[in-house]
Image 1 (cartoon, helix red, strand yellow):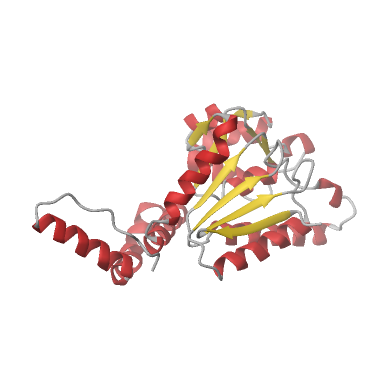
Image 2 (cartoon, rainbow, N blue to C red; image 1 turned 90 degrees about the horizontal axis):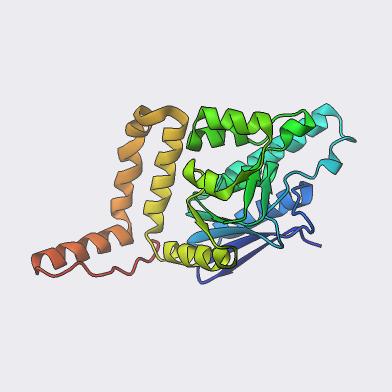
Length: 262
């Protein structure tokens, strides 16, 4: 039985964590995520929605697997998880996460790989690792720091407290908090809109943000034009600019341009 599904419809890929009852992340789910990433890369998908089935997004890692593994084997497990999570983060497509219920540990670390994060108003987030005497294993603490600052990242990792969605929104980790019964509809509408946008420009923005995260403004400036200028050769850019110029010359409002994702 699968622990994760990936469907592609209308150029939107939907990845659903589906390992009842808590959507815990183990070897099988990670390998299925790797397969989903490959499926998306070889498809016509132009945006991705990540969600969890059932009442909770994910309680995090399946710790039942850990005690029987040697330290070297366990390190290999976590390195594989990190590799797949990072490949998901680096998809050249906009990724939106829709988080409901509890989003803990590895589940939070996976959600943090999304570009935009929607949360239901009763969702709660946290790093439970402190209660186990370990650390955030898949880059959670410093990805929180990147978005919310070092002080909050340290407090939340050290205390393992459950953080309400509203607090995460104010901290800049969650983009939008919506009513529980509207979460999927609003996230779906947003990702559908992104799927109709200029895919190559979205990919360029993700690459620039990654450079900034790795090396700051100077690092992003260094590669800016290597990333930005090839986008001008895309069909979307040539058509979009021509359409805007024609409207400007005619003194008309700029029309909505039908981007093809090419």
